[in-house]
Image (cartoon, rainbow, N blue to C red; front, side, top):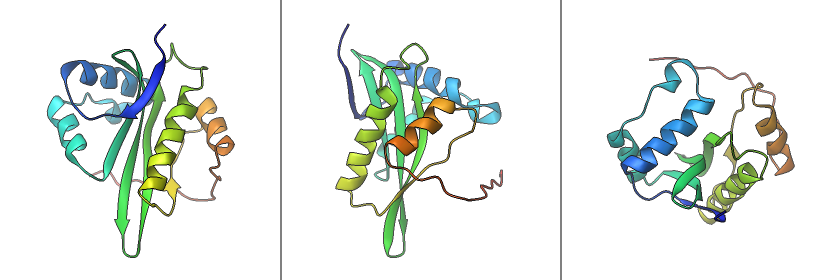
Length: 146
């Protein structure tokens, strides 16, 4: 078995797109589950305030996490999105590896904080976040669909 490595995703090609589609289908629901296009992936990769960190088993992407940098008056923070490890690779510490890489990049970019939300049904993910230093906050999460 090839060692699994994490890195920032730099290019959008059909193989990467297929792997990312498969991962997102495992965690997204409803209209969020719509399939992304190569053009959409390329657009995200061009955005200097968005980083997609991937875990690769050889050439195949088996895990991912996205860091969206939010530029605000007087500070920059990060929002974590789409943390997912392929179901056949779970339980090997890849989620922690992805999150540690994401935290390292956020520190290099001198972000003041990193935020994330997690659905209660994602038990393993919600158990991981406090172990790596995230604190649960009392909040009301809202969404306005446009």
